Length: 348
Image (tube, rainbow, N blue to C red; front, side, top):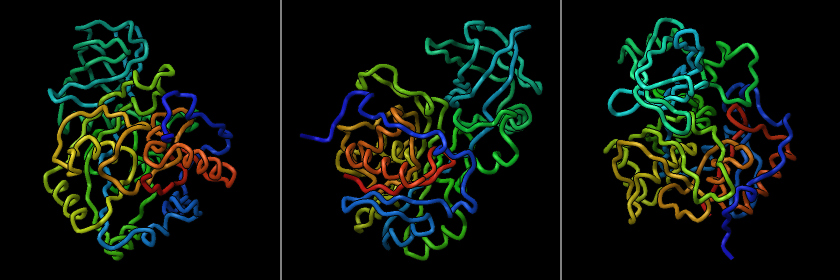
């Protein structure tokens, strides 16, 4: 019988609250690393990663940069909480809104700090399309002044994100602004670790997937075939696609740094296994039954029970293997979620 599941309950497990990391490891490459392979489980640390890779492999990382996406706004006297989700091709933004029922098409909302926007459309899921009163660097500067990090709800910050979070919640690869949430597998890298990986003969390529607020939303209902992820904008340049394909042609493995990278690669691959240039949105949902054509290895953090990301790693390495790996990680004191430890998974 194939290792396949269709019900949300198949991806549940008990996680003690104390396993949820509230701060990252310091230095970043001191985080623990659980190697999950067909031969079994192996406890390592991130600094061991170069030894687990081989000359000729290509490491693919997400270079998105997290923006301060939470905005406090008002429409008249009504207070509206806005979380930017993703930029759209026409320059508008899809956003999630608390008290969205108070918004109507054509309404103008004013954010703390002076930034304002017009409501262009409403979505049934509580999302709205906003046209802000400025763009480009002027918009980025206003957002830095008015916005706050949209930290995941499981990171406890009663007084809001700290100045340290502004640094901690950004990866070493961050270059292109647009993410609401960090591609957290990238949080474990340091300059010294990247140097060691390069010295091992491993190439490095970056792609871009702007992680949206939908990454925190659980599936609704038990039938996973009906679940749809929020779309996210991504880009794989022709040069990046060529470098990935060349490494594979030489016999090297593709090492995806994070689930966001893997989702983008699987959105851009053809039936022959070639990664194609890509620029657009993807809502691909990787769950058991998906046939992977790109990454051979996946570096990723430990994910929430019943989450689409735990479903993704179960699809990649097998549900039974991942349930065993997570049980081991919990018993061995690994730290979970965005600021937690890492796992290196071999494709089943």
